[in-house]
Length: 308
Image: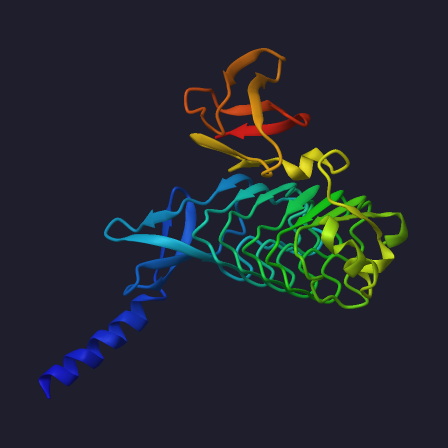
């Protein structure tokens, strides 16, 4: 009988402590489970600037793996003039909950990592993103997830995407380019891209899937083209992450491209680093903004880089 009592007492304690909150590095987290030692990003609505979420955090006693961003974690009120400016998530995060970054009008850059599977309703509602790369791990994007990101120019959808909800990208003017590597067109609603002139937006898809997208409702309304690196927006094809970065920045290239050289410049145009590696340690550089010139076998692209 004692064993049963202690077992249930343990379960009650685990459930109770699972709601515990703590701060690490100035960011609030909530314990998801003291059994699996997992946590989620908690309420951080007052934060501004560049935010980097690490894979693990500590409450001073235990070390937790960060697996999610809770609902309304960084959300702001309608018409807010203060918000974070960039977010970088680790590969351990699998879920971005509802309205997590809603009304973050100053949020221009979001690195979602490579582990997210679901992007919740209104997750980036009325944010200020200029481009977004949806990783291959994402299977579902919920309703109004990126509604009215009015600075959004390019979208890159990964190979695992199967569905995009109502008005997910509605009124995302001035969108000019969409790429998608999924062989089967994701299920969409007629209003997923509401308010956009799809007939003037390029849709880049794998060559073997052009006919499928060209005959699928909604997707057929785009200018369907072959996903070819010579035509494709290099800004979308070449991924630099995490960004902002604390120590090591990674450069991810499509299999059809080889890296030749990477050069980092400060805001004065002075070269501060030269490398030919896909993984570059910049921990010795001072905090601030830089520009990374990535030279490849298919051309060169310059990307902004923020050192924390």
